[in-house]
Amino acid sequence: MDAAAEVFAEHGFRNATVREICQRAGANVAAVNYHFGDKASLYAAVLAELSRLAQDRFPSDAGLDDNATPRQRLTAFIRSFLQRVLSEDLSARHGRIMAREMVEPTEALDRMARDYIQPQADLLRDILRDLLPPGTDPALTRLCGLSIVGQILFYAHCRPVLQRLQPEGAFAVPELDRLAEHITRFSLAALDALGRHNATTPRGRSGTRPALPR
Image 1 (cartoon, helix red, strand yellow):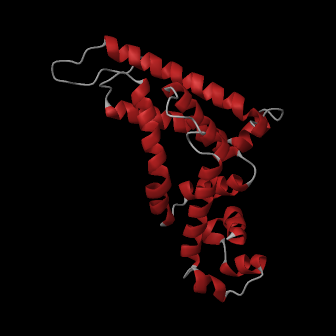
Image 2: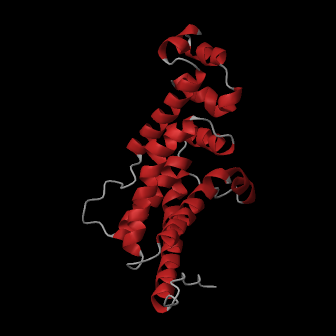
């Protein structure tokens, strides 16, 4: 599994070979078929295991108790997400594999979406429901969640460019707390503005949604 994670992270699913994986693992090529069935099943198992390890190490609730405020929960969600995608150890493999998966999706993405991504989306939706005014359009809540996740993923996927634009910062691991604080404050300001706008903009008689603030 470790050898496969290395090879898949370096070459992607399509260019990785069972032969190279087994050479790195010091195992017979037949071991993949015996234990997993084929390369695709091995890949799915590696992706699931890396996702589980990343989530176990950096849980989305960051150990908060049930009395945590919605803002504390959002901060914990953002910081943990950043840790999973920017950390240099095991999650670095996970981040590289998932980045390739976004560009060239495989059948394993269906399982990932169901078992790991959807629960995260549901958690963020619940946090946002507590931050936005009651009755907020679910479509707007969903867009707010996607905007928050988009900020986080930007720093992961565009890291090579950021390292060239600002070599002294580059959002390395020591910068995660500062970056998490920025994304949280930026997102809360947007949520507060949207909440105020929707509270003062009544729906039309036809029930159409209010326009977003310009």
